[in-house]
Length: 153
Image 1 (cartoon, helix red, strand yellow):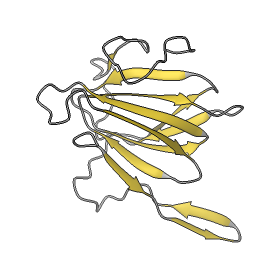
Image 2 (cartoon, one colour):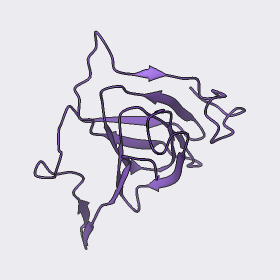
Image 3 (cartoon, one colour):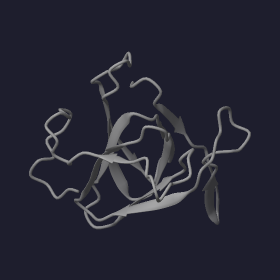
C-alpha cells in the first residue's frame, strides 16, 4: 500500500426500500472539507494522470465500475515508485483517500454505462491558481499500466 493511502469499506444499511451508506463524517479524525463534486467518465475512457501539491482527495465510486490507479512519485516517500491498482464499484462502496503528491487516474471499465466518482477533497478549488498538475495518460515515467493504445485524456 502506498504511504498515506487509505481504503475504507463503507457500511451499507439496506431494507426493502433500498439502502444508504455514510461516506464521511465531520467527527472523523483529520477531517477537513473543501468541496464535493462528481466526475463522470464514459465507458472505455481514461481520466489520468494528475496530482496535487496541497490537496488530499477522497474518492467514492457511486455509479459504475472504475479501475483506479495511483503511483507514488514522492521521492522522499517510503513507497516511492510503488503503485496501487484496484477496481472500485457502486456495489461495494469504499472511500479512497489519495494523499497530496500521489499521481492518480482511473479508467471506466463498464461496458455500457458511465462511471461517476464523487470527490470530497480537503481543499476548495482555486480557479485562479489551480492545485492540479497533469501528465499525459501515456506518460512513460508511470510504469504501472499499458494505457497507451486506449482512449485517454
